[in-house]
Image (cartoon, rainbow, N blue to C red):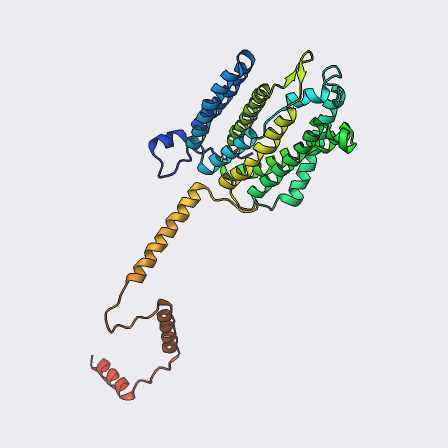
Length: 367
């Protein structure tokens, strides 16, 4: 197999020496290592310390990594990375509280779904795999020609719609007012729609990154952006536990309280995800996925070409011939010269007079 040589740098001509030193494969590797280190430290803090300490660490760490990404990555890739991070951050992961709610025993939650662990885990895994395949088919058949921004709008709308089923179950409206079982309501909701939305988010992201990353650095760039995506999920999960604690949601068998779980669902799965509409409008290109997105180098080259054309147009526009001079268009002049040359070639040659021929013979004889 023939592999492309990795670029030494993807810095622009206008970048200073500092950015030139960062926008290299080495800078990309350092940024990836920093992201992994922050995720590891966050996991340790979650196990050994309080939520307040975790929150104090999360804010500066996330800010530092995002600023560093704009220094290391090309601008378009950094904007896409920021969007993916914010998309995961503002869809709050609450698998812990919801999982405890669905599997809580009658002694803990008398009026609850009471799913068995086998049913809940098996069904969730099966629906996740099925949803992934369904999401791939939906994207290929119906969304592959849409713009990046509109695809994320569709997936976000589906997530919010699916979360409404979790809200109905947590408020027990399905059994008290609608007469629908928990099993059927669970099947129609977030359990199957969220995997579909995950694939709908993944496919355009992969297409976008494949066009924005420097040539020869595709695998490294994809790994780095995937680590940012996972880092956003980790922060989202940590924030979900922190907010659940402030809402007094208890998940232990001895002391369980799910009275405010519906509020956590509304906040984390229905209100905060609406920010994705604004983020996608501001950070993602509103171009169809079938259109090639120009890189920074191509945009700079196009800008230079446009500037040179503008200067030439100004020169021609400001040129003023002398008074009385006849200004002929270049194309008109070339056409006139071509016609004159053709007429000259086709014109018959005049015969040479006989007296001139006899005089030349006499001069040759005398010589």
